[in-house]
Image 1 (cartoon, rainbow, N blue to C red):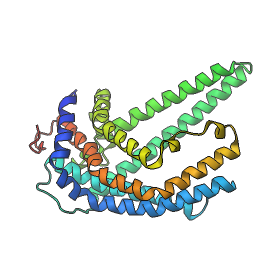
Image 2: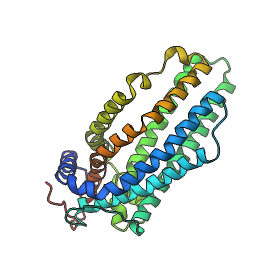
Image 3: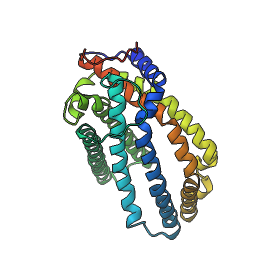
Image 4: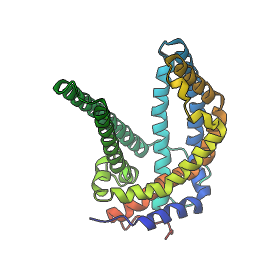
Length: 301
């Protein structure tokens, strides 16, 4: 069983992303722009519908519900394009700079199939876990109606934590090497990713923290500056009153709608770093864990 070299993987991720930042921008700007424009129009209306729903008590329906689902599918397709392009560059399967790139072929569709399959598997896992947890809770309640409330709450909290940990474990192992596995001709990449990541979960987790956490923190700080700290801190008084709580959530949706241009612009600017640091480590890791000597390291240590 090969072990992922954490330090070298992190070094490669940053060296590739910053060393080839111009190429990364060229590879991703068209699909990223398409996604940003689609998100702006779809989510703007969706946030408005949610705000109206919170204030009126009438659930959103029709196009307001359908369009975000279609946007999610479009986002997965565009992410597949980006993932394939960056991974090909990182593996040395394409050479040279790129001014613009847009490709939707069988490879991208297979990566999209892998993303969609992973999403459905995780939804199924959450559904089954929720049913099991609810059944266990009912069984405990039936067995001892006098069970202390704090103990019940602690049991539910521990079960939720266990489910979250299991979800992270499954998602990490199934997704980390998905794109390079597809490029290597391995169908939708899920089973190959699961196979190669055996015994490397914590190493992958450490790599992900070192590469993605700084970007996530920067994004969080910038979004807090745009939205204001109060947006992320619920009003304790409002939480005690259902009507006030709904009114507060409606205000949050309207604030999101009002600040969407800045939020989308921020996401667009940061996306080259985010995507480079997301897909480059997996490319390097696949080369190490699969033993594919023909895959180039692209000249980065």
